[in-house]
Length: 165
Image 1 (cartoon, rainbow, N blue to C red):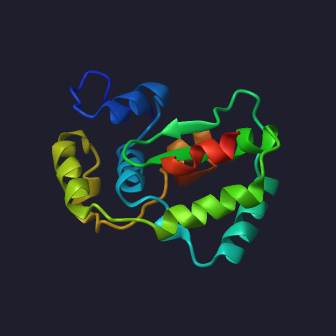
Image 2: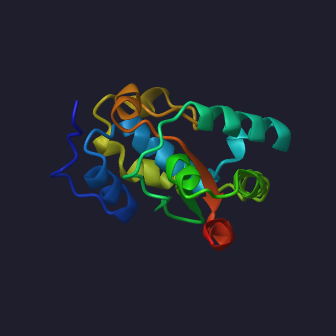
Image 3: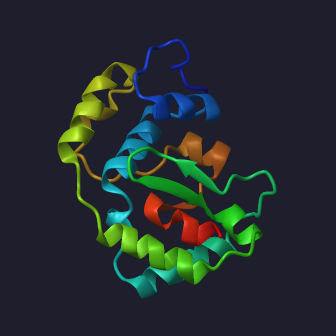
């Protein structure tokens, strides 16, 4: 089910870019994008060791894609580092995990900003997702997973140079 947002005015440039880049993006995926922008990866970290084990497991279960991008701006202080391209370029997984954990541990939540942006895009909510949304992390929609198979880590932009050198 292709998105229905093509002719709707959206102030947020990052959301516009994602709608264009991912024609099957759903409202739930936009909320996830915004959540990551304002809260980073903090909701995913239990320990550095378990994070690394999960990263290795995920790497073993993805297809390496020659057409993948390495990083994607999600606005604010964060980017998504795509695992397929990171591995394809033989980058250091321990370093990625280190900065993923550091990113998670240095978050200053911007709850009010998040709520304001959600309010400003409420008119896009064609499935009434926000009616039952409790401002916690959400997964990508099944449609998004099916079309894009997203595998990435959200990292603070201040660590990018070290990761991609």
